[in-house]
Structure formats: structure tokens, C-alpha cells
Amino acid sequence: MTSSRPSTATPPEPRTAAAGRRTPRRKGRGNPYPYVFYLPAGIIYTVVFLVPTIMAFYFSMTRWTLFDSTFVGLENFTDFFAEQNLRIGFQNTLIYAVSTSGLKVVLGMALGVLLTSRLKLRGFLRSVVFFPVLVSTVAVGITFSVLLKPDTGLVNKALALVGVSGPDWLGDANTALLSVAIVDVWKGVGLATVIYIAGMMSIPRDYYQAVAVDGGGAWHRFRYVTLPLSWPATNSVIILSFIGGLRSFDLIWTMTRGGPGFTSDVIASIIYKQYQAGFFGLSTAGNVILFIVVTALVVPLTRFLSAREVPA
Amino acid sequence: MRALRRSGAEVAAFVVAVVVFIVPFSFMVLTAVKDELQSAELDFAWPASWPIVENFVAVIEARDYVLLRAFVNSTVLTVGAVALLVVFCSMAGFVLQRRKGRMGTTVNFLVLTGLIIPPAIVPTIWVLQGLGLFKTLPGLILVEVAFHMSYSVLLFRAFVAAVPRELDEAAMIDGCTGFRLFFQVIFPLLRPVTITVVLTTSVAVFNDFVNPLYFLPGDENATVQLTLYNFQSQYSTQWNLLFMDIVLITIPPLLAFVFFNRKIVAGMTAGAIKG
Image (cartoon, rainbow over all chains, first blue to last red; front, side, top):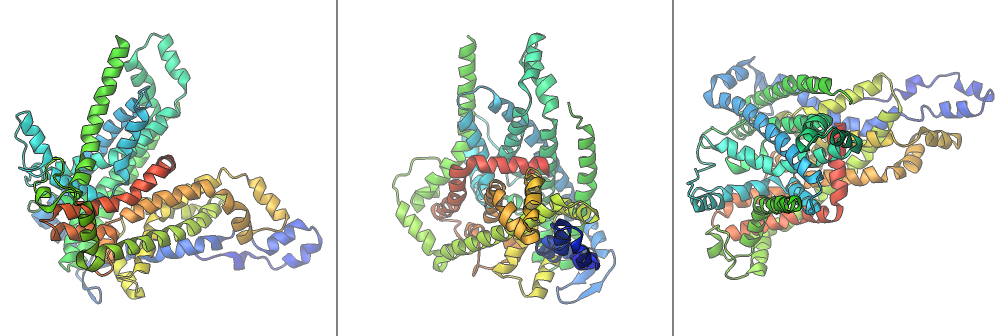
């Protein structure tokens, strides 16, 4: 991303200076919006993000120690899919992304409707729901892994009070991933909610009055006004939380470390495990797979969602 | 009857919010101020004794004051990354909004790419190693800048669109172009969005766990999130200290929340809808 200014500065400029005052002075200094402004950001972006992303495609096909690499073709990728544990990670990533983004849409929309209504506690509730967004994921993960402990955990103690014996949420292969997903929703639903609130507040009052004139009730207001007109909000909640879900690592890592066994591993946690084990090529192959999964799912999804976004 | 039902719904919403959202936070604080023995029970009981100061001092002194160093590191990291983000991304966002063309299209594409694509971890380490920046704070600052760049550029670009072009033209008549135009005329006008970017990215950088884990490993120059992670394995018996650490680390975002709640919410929703 280099500046094209020197090459575009046209030579005859100084001569025409006599013709008019303003333009030559302006052109003499180059464009008022010089491309040099891209330079600092561009250098950092290129060196720290773009180059590694491109190099990843090469290194994912090598056995690699950071200092030297031997080309092994697609071996890392076949390893990745041949191993049962790694395949689970692939599947889990999709389950995790779909379930978290689905729940965030449903709960975020419900909370959005609730918190744009005329509740007295609206302000308090909005703050309470939003605050977890700003708390560190590690802190949330540690706290909930304590709350979800099988015998001493608060959740199971509360369930015992009503006569239900709760499972070992994080220790059971069947519930581990979904428990983490629910905590993810707990932490992230506040963001979905404020996006919905912003969307719903911008719906003109007239539409609701029109429904009232036609004798419609609360359900009609929701079904025929709120739901269709908050589509842009739904759109961004889906995209944001779906991308976040596919890339998610920190919460899963602090709560289960991918366990028990490999049952709650996702691609991002496998990347870390392989990195820790020194398999840099394999780890990078995981990165490339994640890259392909994210692009292959998010780009068509964005197209699909924005195609449905018909301005009302 | 209707009023009654409304207030019934209100009470129900309140109770659910308290159980779901307030209880976990109360649990953090209560456990943080208990003594070691009681905290090990991990229940919701009222503290029998209140060794707040002792716990606080113990956490600070643990592992040769690692937490203090971590707070310094996290502050340097956050301030450094956010300062670079503000200056560089406002410049880029300004030109991106004002100057269309093939270059602009390319940059827009790169910005979207940065939003969607997950960074390639080990190749980034490889690059940083080559530059001698791996396991250093400046290296991590660059990483944070690169990974939060797209979001910030988008926010700045959207805000610049609302700054009238006539202003640029007036400044140009006075001979102000390029750097002077931007830093003397435009940048001061970007104050609202600058505040938004500062708040949202500093919360994100301060809370970041993954990048310090990869690019700044080791106890020596840990960030606060890493100390928490390391304490988790070390303090498997001293729950009060672990939770005191959690509480201390939650204070900076809490302060940001208390003072700038509206700004943060506005920034995050704007970023989401533009993105």
C-alpha cells in the first residue's frame, strides 16, 4: 500500500500556476486526501495480519519448527481429518457457532422487546444485561466453572432445592460444549440486546398506531411491525455472533480445556493444543481450515441476509 | 387489572435478572472477601469473617508482585494500542471516506477481510520472531492494533461521512491540505467517535486473553488476564485469592461502564450495524 503521489504529481503543474490561483496551489501539494494516510495503518496491517495470513497457506503444508520447514503437501490436512479428535473439533465449532448465535438472536430479540416497553426498571435491566459484555471472558469462565461444579456448584444446589439432580455440566461429554455455549450466551446476549434496542427504537411510532387502528394486539404489533422492521438488527446479530462463535476460544479454554477428553474441542482450541505440542505445521493447517470454514460460511450468509433486507 | 399484570411482569423480570445476572457477580465479590477455609466451600453463604485487606495484600504480593507488574503491562498495552489505533485509523478512515477510486475499493475490501478472517497464529509468531518482537510488549501492541484496526476504521469512516465536505474546501482555500487539513481541521471534529473508539477498543484490549497467551507468554511480563489464567491452576485451594484477583481485574471495565455506559453502547451498536 504505497503512496502513488510522486508518480501522479504532474510535471507541467508549476507553469499553469499563473492561470488560476487556487487549483495550482492545491495540486502543487498533491491530492488534499493523500494516500500516505493509509501508510501507517497499512504497514501494520500488512506485516502483522496480511503476510501471516498468506504465509499460513504455505506453512500449513510443511513440517515446521519456526526456523526451518519441510514441504509435506497436504499431509497436515489429511492428518487433521483422519484423527477422530480433530474431526470432533470441526463438528463442535459448527454446533457452538450455530447454537450461540441462534440463542443470542432469540433472547436478544425478546429482551429487546421487553426493554423497549414501558417498564419502570428498564434502565436498570438494560445495564444489568449489558454489563457482562465488558467483563473479561477469563473471569466469566472461571466463575461459571465454579458455579457449575457437580456437587458444590450453586447451579446444582439450586436445582436440588426443587428436586432435580443436575448433571456434571462441564465434566460430562454430553453437556460440556452446550454448557459453555450457554455461558457464552449469558456473556454476549447484552450486546445482541442493545443492537436490537437500537434497531427497535428507530421504528417509527406510526406503524404501531396503524396496527392499533386496525384493532391489532401485542402479538400483531410484534409479528407485523417489530419483527420485520428489526431485520437489520437481526442481520448484524447473526453475523457478529456467528463469526464470534466460529472463532471462539477463550471461554472454552478457561472452562473445559476442550475436555472431557476431546469432546468439547473446537478448531481454535485444537490450534492452540497443536501449537503447544510444537506441531506448528498442523496448528497452521487448523488455522487455514478455520479460515476456509469462516469464509465459506460467512460470505454466503452475509449475501443471503442482506438480500432479504428489503427496506420497508 | 392491567396495571396489576404489568407490575407482575415487572417483578418477574426483576427476579429473573437478579438470579441470572446479579447472583454470579455477588458470588464473585462474596468469595473474594471470605477467608480461605470458608471460600473453599464455594457456596453463596454470607462471609463469616471479612479479611478483605488481607486477601487484597496476599493477591498483590503473590509470586513476587506479579499482579502489579501485570497491571502496569496491561496499562501500557492498552494505552499504546489505543493511541496508535486512534491516530492511524482516523487517518485511514478519513481518506477512505473522502477519496473514492480503485485504491478505496481495495482498502474497503481489506477492511472487511480484517473483520471476518481469523488471524493465522503461528505465522504471526514467525513474523514477529523475524522482527525480534515476539514475546515483547511492542510486538503485542502491534498485534492488537492490527486485529482491532478494521472495526476502528469503519467507525471513523462512518463518522467522517457526516463531516461536510464544504469544510475541507474552505480549509483548502486557506491552503490547508493533507496533514494540516486533517490534524488541524478534521481530527478535532472527530472527538465523539474518537471517544467511542477509545472506550470500546480499550475494553477489548484490556480484556484480551488469546493474544497475550500466544504472543506474550510467560509469567515475567504477563498481562492481567494471563495472571488470572495462571492463578487458576496455582490457587486451586485458595479460592478467595482467585476471586479477589477476578474482582480487581473487573474494576477497570466496571469504571468504564459506570461513567461511559451510553458511549460504549452507542459505539458497539454503531460498529455492529456498520460492520
